Length: 251
Image (cartoon, rainbow, N blue to C red):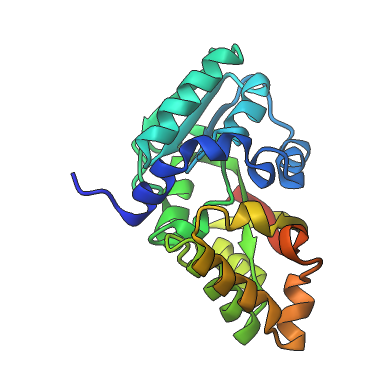
């Protein structure tokens, strides 16, 4: 089987996602639990689980926690880590976000976090989420978001040079419209900023690509600078990205 770009990229870096600060400790992780109030009787599903952080966080609060991904290395790691943490109710499954291997009306809660900007089709994914959720079930999504127009285009290009599997982060407006169009009513939305350390963010690349990415942070229009907020220099260089968080109910 030929691996996709996403599988190649995340297969090589699977272990790093277990300890990645934005994934393991980001503010949005605790916000998801607070905003969804998971119940012990619930069946929950985390799509594109990556390092499994959402699954580990929700597992103690629900009856069954499924975690899916298209990268086998990620799934193997999640299975092992769940066992280490004593989370016996976690199950893993290989699945594309746009083709979930579950029956209709199977889950009380579906989550995905910092992943949809890698999906082939977010609209098809939303249809699948709607299909597998029970009536009035909750969908909790967190993903990188960008401003509309050329500023957002620049941020997406910046991210894609660093990670070619990054297809496109949406705007808050695009998420809002898509959720409504695909059968969800939005109960809550917010934006969360996260500080990124350039050294670790770009660490997978050689010196030439790192220099190029540094140049993209240095040669900014005032509008892009206000969005990315680069600070410091050398090993202390940081910038910020923005996450959009939505809690929606299956209509």
